[in-house]
Length: 626
Image (cartoon, rainbow, N blue to C red):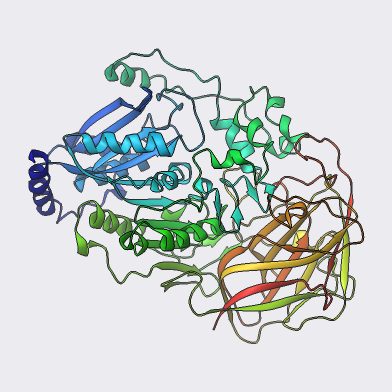
């Protein structure tokens, strides 16, 4: 009863004290931010928050000095180094505290000053739940906690959302695809796969993050001593630099990190799994057989690593929330930016080689209105007319809104791949047409030792191997092992917004091989901007739990993992599709043997064919918005 009264009086006090908040901290220097934080915040650092098994997680807490009662908390949990606040974290802490929130930073289990053994996503269903318990039980807490973060600081929120903790009243996951296991037809398991093909980004990410032999300080030290140690030793690693452009080619794949002198760890376990391995369902990943318990404000981007699963998961939460309040409060923002670069949205926005116009979006305003609604209980703080889906349509270069994804007005239209037998390269006879061809096929040789290079598209976190964005693809399209299909110039603009499906009919002399598809916007001057891409391992064509080898001479249907975008192809532009069998180094190469791939050192050249006949058509399904 006493705590309830304190919550009521404290809320009333903060509604008045924070109502006039107008300070712009974006111009403050690091020194000014640190000074301001010391003036307005009660600071507790390196607190060991106890988990159910006795392990303590290192936690820094910043809460308002002038609080008249309990306050809500914004909780940020990360595997990354938080021991010294960078200017962005400083600004977030000052902004939160000045608005009447407690701001809490925590390192996941097994990272830096947190005890225990590291696991990707940091045990969200146990450690995450226990953290909610601890925060809500503090005298200064009003029992209302919001979780915030981008990338690995966001992905753990999904597993926690499945637990429906009563104190977890709202969340803002940004670029959070690596927390998704299986959702609908996406079986990516934390971005480890696309279409059953391993992505290399986590090979590289794990080199820096997974440290089985990490340095630790003695147990039982006070928070004060731990804080003092952190001033001169943040327990970070100092691993040798790696030339990933060379190391990513190392075979067998399973030895890629141990070849660098690393002890065996998470990578060596994960690389041996398949998309249907039961182990994927035992960790922290969220899967679509679970409930969803939290109102969510999602931030995604077209050129990120997993836009498809991200959009599919927000759809899932909208239809599978635990109650109407949760289902009706799933909001999504999708920008043209790269991974986590939402703060950079602005005029003359450049993605790769392309100017995408004025992409300005007030991210901070939307975030604080969301927190004020759910954590401060200011019902009118968040505009109820906000579209459920706000997305930037490239080409048209404008923000749009819709109550659903894909937009209600989107209608599926097929465009067919066609060729007289020589669609090889930009200089071949490949066509993309609304008319279904009667006969046709084109072939190419795929040599895994000479894979097609990745240039742009959606990616992140890969040691500099690939820069994401809308880059020109003509250097790729000049290769003879890339089939290129191009439409006639458009007579009027055509908007494509939603999931883009690609269906191929293929054959091969290899037991197993991959097929990669790319959607491209060709400007009148010939510049070929990548819009999105996808890939699929042929052995999984009957299901990820039903691998089946190919037989020479037989034609198979491949339903590719969908691409996801919003693009308006302008008048005079052409729509282009590329088909090949590799996209490296974004995706690991298929060695074409039909074996495990991860433990093999030699590949074989595959002779692959794409068919275009009436019996075996290959086509895109485009969600066209009139």
